[in-house]
Each structure stands twice: as C-alpha cells, then as structure tokens.
Length: 410
Ligand code: SAH
Image 1 (cartoon, helix red, strand yellow):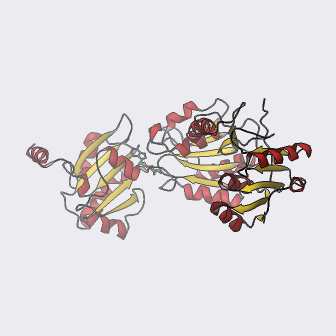
Image 2 (tube, helix red, strand yellow):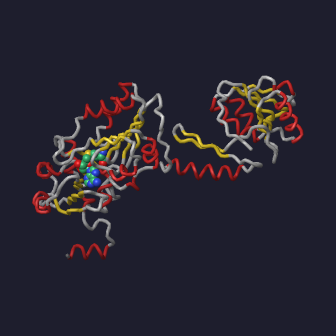
Image 3 (cartoon, protein in one colour):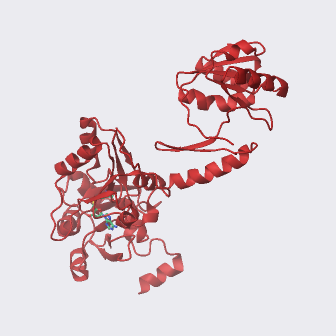
C-alpha cells in the first residue's frame, strides 16, 4: 500500500545516485521545486552533464557510498546497476531517508508520480502495486486535458491569501468560441464580473456559490461606471478572491481592458489578460466577410463609431484597398457615410451591417455607402452590430465565377 504524500523539497538536500538518462529526465522537476541537488556518479550522460552545468549542480565523480546518503532528505537512485540501486535503497532504509529506486520493476520507499498542475491544483498519479509509468502518464494526461478546459471543479473552497484578476476575452458569443484558458479561469473563479455581450451562456454553468456581477448595459439599466468596475475588481481581489472579468470579444479592443489592468497594477493586484476573437474580425467572418482579402483589401481600420471621424478614418474610408470596421456604429451610420462620401469614397462602396454575429439572431444587411442610411433604417438595424465598409463587403466576393454572375444578374 502506498500513501500519497506531497512533500516539499525546496531548499532541502537531495541526492541523485547515478547520472544517466533517468536522472536527466527527473532532475528538472526537482530543480524547478528548488531542491538542493547533489549527484554522485562515476560518469554523466550528455543530457545530465548539460543540466549539471547549466544549473551549477554539485557532482561527485565516483561510485555512491553509504555516507552520501547521510545528509539527504530524499534520494533518487538510478545507477544502471540493480545491485547498487538495491544497496542505496537499503542504506536509505537504515538512515530513514525516503528513496526512489528507478531499477526496472523495483521501487524504494518512495515513488515519483506522474503530475499535472492547473493553477494551484496538483494532481499526481501512481500505481499502488508495481510500477507502470506509461499508464500513470496516460491517466495524468487525461486529467490534464479536463483541467485545461475547466471541466473539473477546481474552484477553491477555502479562500486563498492572495487574490488575483483575469481579464478574460469571451469572444463574440458562442461558448465554444471561448479559449480553453478562459474556461479554466472561469472554473477557478470565485467572482465573475460580466458584460451583457459575449458568452453569457457560460455563466449558467458556474457553481451557485460563485458571485456573478452583471455590469453590462441593458434596456432600463444604466451600466456600472468604469471606475466602479475597477474598484469592484480590486476590492474582490484584495479580499483574496479569484476574479474573472469576462468581456465580449477581446479585452483590449474597445473593452476598456487597459484601464482595468492599470487599476490592478496600481493596486498591486496580480492581473493577467486572456485574448479572444474580437467582433471586429469574428462578426464580419460570421457573415462570410474576410476583413482582408488578397487583391481586394490589404489593410483594415477598426474604429469606434461613437468617436470623432479623424483624418485617419476618413483616409481609410476613401481608400479602395482598406477595409473599415466600425464597432458601436449604428447610431453614427449617417455621420460616417456622409464623412466617407465627402472624403471621396464612391456611392457604390459596399457596406455590410452584421447584427448579433455568431448568435441565432444574426442578420446581415448588405448595402452601399449611398444607400446605407435608408437601408439600415428600413431594416431596423440595432446594436450590437459591426459595420464593414469596403470592397470585401461585396456580396459576391467569395462566390465562384458562375455563381457570381448569377448574383449580378439578380
Ligand atoms: N471587446 C469587444 C468590443 C466591445 S465594444 C470585441 O473585441 O469584440 C462593443 C461593440 O462590439 C458593439 O457595439 C458591437 O459593435 C460589437 N459587437 C460585439 N459583439 C458583437 C456581436 N456578437 N455582433 C455584432 N457586433 C458585436
């Protein structure tokens, strides 16, 4: 019978008897933990020699002796000789030192596990009887893949001393367009602060104990002001919580993610950012529009429709070979179309307005700069929508030639 024990070897003396390929495989793990390692071996394999050199590990070039075991908290023996390994294991037994015996089929008083980590969770797999490292690795890998995509209940039950913040991009809406990292961080979260846009369905999967705060704008509700959101994020993290700030699209594309990162940095709260498909690219894509297309558009200009029409935006709008993508632009469509025409863009410049991209409500209105305002009004276009202005928004852009002819004939 084996009891699995998590031991901390950081700063403790560990002896490696033997410097071959087994040592080379296992050294990195103990080095990472910060063990004080010494190797006793007549010779080192090339890989071990490299590790020894790069980490400044003490190496004694001779056969291992009983006295070597004396100072060690833990011994790893893989000398290539089952007899020597058995001797080392016996010396360890006498000096009450735990020992891993790497000889085939043998194991000493300790065994190394196949490990995987996710955040601060460690899962270790071993065989209770005999050794079967390949099975252990397979079980470990299967668990690792579940951990990776947030499919296991890894949320802390006991608060940790140190909170942290993850600004997580959720993509345009469907849960399966979220990254595995986003899913994992959600599985770990104590608090989720969410917007109205993005993968809101994922919130229903959370534990009932997870605090979910909706800071999004909805009809009849004012959005929570940004400085209050910042304060909320920082306060929860300081209270030791793992905070996920879940955002639609990418956090750094018109998401005010930069301000939230700055607030965390200022407060000394650890913060990470997880990127995601932005609606600037993914919503046109949902309507079959590539934002760039060889020979048609070689650049894209992404702009917030609520802002000023700058010289740069007007130049992009007037340029045949640039795609202009407008977010938050429904209310500003008239101003943008007029600006574009005044800047020299043709009335016939294709425009596509894609509402609720990647959701069951997705709808695309195809029009031109000259007709955009009237067509949008007639269709009753509403937010959230992405407006694509440029030749890539031509309805027949990706159709094969005969189909394109039919599309023109219509
Ligand atoms: N950070 C987000 C953008 C936030 S600004 C991102 O990278 O996508 C909000 C704007 O994004 C909306 O006004 C709309 O223009 C656009 N948007 C976000 N999701 C959308 C969707 N599913 N369909 C259409 N537009 C969307």
